[in-house]
Length: 166
Image 1 (cartoon, one colour):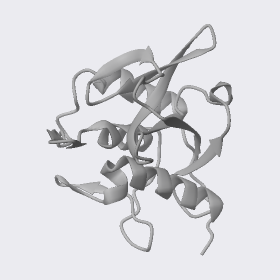
Image 2: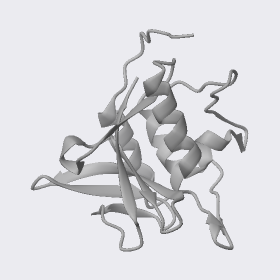
Image 3: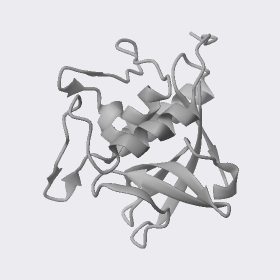
Image 4: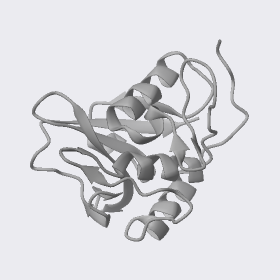
């Protein structure tokens, strides 16, 4: 079912949230530690930024995205799942936060998101663009926790540039 959203998404609020919590996580959300080669708090933090920007949580249906009382959906906390969630919502014009993949980084602005694919073809990291320095995007992220660092990752085989909207 397609929905027209009456909500608005504020990339400014998403970025302001990142400024406040990039280096010191928000205690209202569980911090997800790295376990062996997996995990980390990157996508939990990306989701928190989008929530702060006005993205509504979706608790039911085929495409849930939510956090409640130290429990959460896979799409809230797993990079590849959030990537697929955003693209599916955009493709099918579903209610909630959407992500349109674009070919060039210069098509993004603060409040948009980058997903990073590893050499195994798995999307394993996400970060929020929080600043443009002479048109060069800087990101903020968790695991590790950084504010306004260069967007390139020497380990990333591919980057996915996602414009965020409702």
